[in-house]
Image 1 (tube, rainbow, N blue to C red):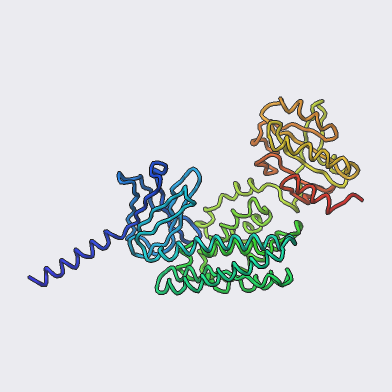
Image 2 (image 1 turned 120 degrees about the vertical axis):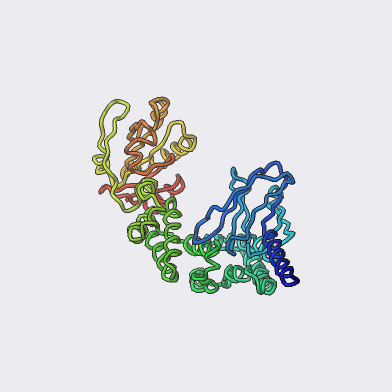
Amino acid sequence: MKRISFLLALIFAGQIFFAQDTLTVKLHPARMFPWTILYELNNVKQNYINNKQQNEDSTFVYKMQDLSPGMYLLMYDMNNRNFIYFIYNHEPISLEIYPKEHNKILIHRSKENKVFLPYATKYNKWISQLNELEKKMDKGQLTESDKKDFAKICDMLNQQQINYLKKSKNLLAHKYIEAMTEYYPDINLPEKTYWKKKKVQYFSHLDFNDPDLQRSNIIINKINQYIFEIDPPKEPKTNHLEYMKRIEEILLKIKDQTYRDNVIISLINSFINVDGRVTKMLINKYLKTMPEKDKRQVNINAVLEQVGMTVGETAPEFTFVDFLNKKHSFYKILKQKSYTLLIFWGSTCSHCLHAMPIVNKMMQNRKKDFNVVAIGIEYEKYPWSSEHQNYPDFYHGLKLQKWQNPIVKTYGVHATPTFFIINSKGEVIAKPYDVEDIETWLKMHPAR
């Protein structure tokens, strides 16, 4: 009888333990955040777990015992996409969050998060400061005072790594902290040597194939940092080749096919607004050979439509009618001069109304080698019919239906103004983001 009672007591104690294996969060001020959503980070994805409405005591409570150890994300401000990351490793977690006080977090329960969250806060602050100083170095603006600050922050960051690796011993947080180790060479080195050393050492503390790290955002964050932030490519004609070289170096390090495919899918989306050539290359080289279940994660047609025309491609021919009902062939205009600046704009777009006079002034000195074709994308003729007359040296055309116009969709225009520089052969040779990019291109390609 005593043995049975003892067994029942053990079972009951186990039930209490698991019942306590929860995430409890309180947000301040409570009334501002009535809902939260919980996601698991795994395989470069945010997998939805559950959502909760605020309890009467202003807390949100999630049962966690059936979930795998790893990194999770709690979204608490859906309008502004504010959230926190935290670690779950089979223990109760109790947090208080103060979003209006720079996301201050009080950790009442959780060995993992009492170590990891303070570490991550300091880490993000110092990494951000060091990255800004690297950007100044890249622009040749680094002062002696900046160099001293850089060395000081590096010392603090390195000491933090040592301290928190000791604090996190025997915790899952230890693995995350070790993987987040950053390498910064001596800032007094020549710039090329600095970046070369950083690239060589950048992934030295990261195991791409560790299942625990794959259940976090650490690997993909490191990948994005390496590709986009470390000595980013600066030659528009060949940027895509340098990006692809970096991507392929990384993919060779990943053995797990599912994780590798998800990294590729993430990069396909990341490059849509950075360099659409890379998106197209990744689709053609990798996505089309993936298993069907992975392919379905990407709507290829929608992605390609969003990317639109990219540098190196041939611009499609189209015709347009100006305000005097004269019909023009885009290709005939291209052949008249060495270059054509093609602008998609809107007469009610504030950015366009700011940019167009600047472009007009820029082009006064390039009339011999530049056409300017300005296509108004509108729902109706007015106020385009009067506004376009401020730029008499441009070829003007009107395309109604705005975003649904076939030419607008073919060129992948999703915002105004959108610019293309096209040579007389019809090749897209530049896709400036704004008027500053146009100015930079003109300086690099002076009139002959």
